Image (cartoon, rainbow, N blue to C red; front, side, top):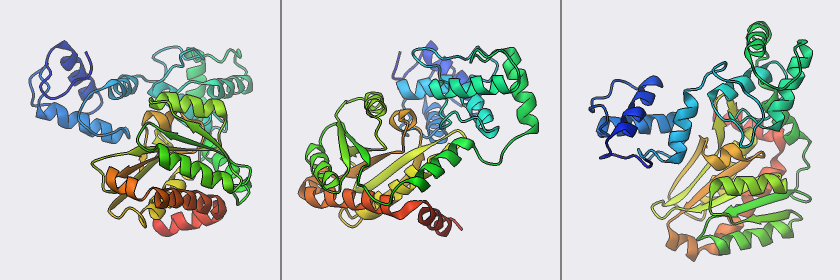
Length: 334
């Protein structure tokens, strides 16, 4: 069935169109079951809204996200399974628990161990049976309590900031993950050496799939993860960090800003910093950024300089500390 793109037709396209309309897309001018220009525009709008790569093509990632978007808290039982449950209903659960002070970790719509533990603690506090399962009674109590008592900031975002505040202003002792999917092996190796010379412990990840890289980074327990990508059509550098639902990784955003600023002195051209929710950003459990650089010829020609720029950016991020980062953010966004 997948991928679906302009020119596709049939029941799968009709299902896609109905789901897009259910998510608030304007009326489509294409016939039901025909993937035409208005369906492509609606897909692109959905991808943009959800922090996905915008190409107007419905692949596995876009389809999964669209299905998840149709799930609402109370539609189904939620509990820890393998593979883990995903959906907007999970994200709403996490957001409500975090607003009440029960830390689920980042709000990512993935029901993992941290969410299960936070849910059990909530049930214990409101004197419900502690089974870490979201059924009708838990939903009713969660809606009742969260309607009366909510903090202004999610506890998970507070925790990330406090972790950043307690970190030493150096790379020494930090565990840094570096991932690349091909084409940037020499830069990744050079960056590895530069970071290691500053006292960091480096783990290299070479899985070709984003979810595989996220899984390896999580298992390794790295403190931050740098996912490197070469984009032939790009002239310059772009970096993205996790932003999804009601959560934004402030540490990831600031790291992305440092990398783009540093890389701009080597790869002259376009630059951008974007909050996104692609698999590797959503599924990693630490501040993670995806760095895309290009064109290939310029990257290869300036391998040493690119590696130096990466290392300088990570060092500057580590040395900056939370207070300086927040001051910089307030100056950038008055």
